[in-house]
Image (cartoon, rainbow, N blue to C red; front, side, top):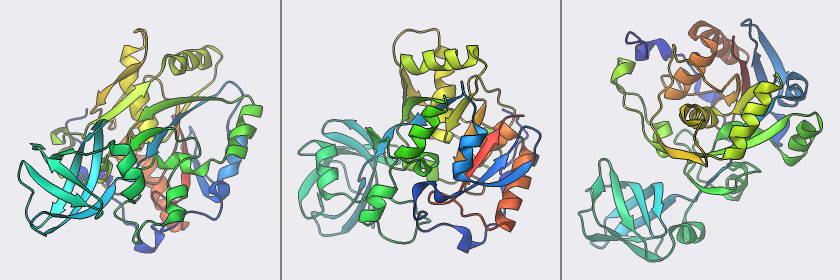
Length: 343
């Protein structure tokens, strides 16, 4: 990492009304800002991706599934609590963020959704350990709410349960969607396959830490939140095949980038490549596997904005974001998309 990089270098002004509060009427209806290898900008529609990709290219998707991670409840003393599951750690255990007037003490119990009680054995840093009376995922599915990002101002409804989820989501565990994938429907995936564009999958369970602000002024002082990733051997084989055929490895979303780049140093190992990653990608990073990226627009001063700046260059991203604001693109999770080709 460049030790001189500072947080203020990754800021931009965003009018509040450009933060998308709901998705496009149809998944593929979003706009697409194309940043080409020469730094040129092109205003397109998302379906134009069909013309921008080539046979032998490989799209890598994150197949994590968003769980209904938000629960309201109370302490046994009656005080209100809001629980956001950060990570499911076992069939009956999880780590969570808890909002309450006073933090629950080790050994205390919380009554959640007026339906069941969990025990709080202790803490791990800012997170609370929770023990559930049944399988965590079953209880969340029955009683939890979809955890929309903090900048979306309405409570999650049935539409969000469907649209804040990719059509290929299969591995439950995320508390935030891998939002670049929200633009694809099954029909477009089939059209891409017909064009000879291969599709592969990784899993990275996106944590609420993705929305945590970077507080360190020097990026070298920032400690990245940990997220669990998994890259199956068939995806590694597809990456090698695409490269051998002259195709590009195109990550769908920054979470796919982090999974791929975390796994790349272990490519020689047999079996599933998996673990916890704290990989912090900033300008100066040398990408091992990723040639291009499909992504949404990211928050000012966020680690994700730093990642896209590492791939495309800081000046091209600053120009692209200024253009997106001026051209009234829709920003963040329910917003428009960007296709970035590495120089």
